[in-house]
Amino acid sequence: MNPESNWYVMYTAPRAEKRVAQRLEEKGVTAYLPMIEEVRQWSDRKKKVKRPLFNGYIFVRSDKSRLWEALQVQGAVKFVNFSGDHAVVRDSEIEAIKRIVETGVAVEVETTHIEEGQQVKIIGGPLQGFEGECIQKGNQDFFIIRVPSIHQTVMVNIPVKFLEVVG
Image (cartoon, rainbow, N blue to C red; front, side):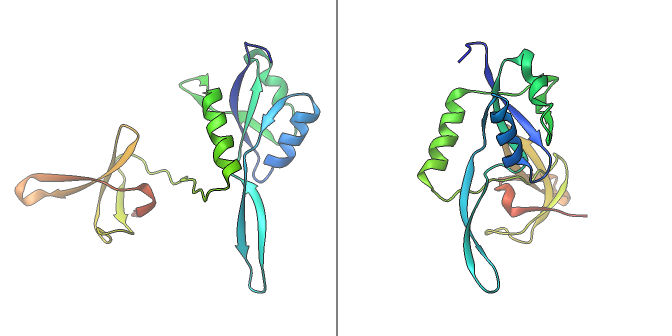
């Protein structure tokens, strides 16, 4: 493995993760698509199905100078960027994902994205029904309840899965 290579995050076309990973491997590019097994319920039966842990994303190990080659594969869309630079995933993070997937523990990936300042309603937990503003502090979501009549604000840490954007 080239010491100059890193793990990058590729965004794929919807439901194309498996095919893109296979095409990359066929071209000699190292790709990792974490898959989890879950039980799906239909009206007449239950069935275990494998699905990508992260919808629309696969990890690609490559030299930065050769990323464009990986994008030539059908179904590849782009590499994830932050502040104009390709997002790099550390080996230890890939190993952690592999361990989680291999253990078969129940996992839940949170994909809800609520923008800072959006009006939200709490849809679960002990504060269910409250409406207020969502702010972010660090990498956690906080819910603000404003009490304008006494010029006070209460800030509560609420899991994003319990928040729903209002209007």
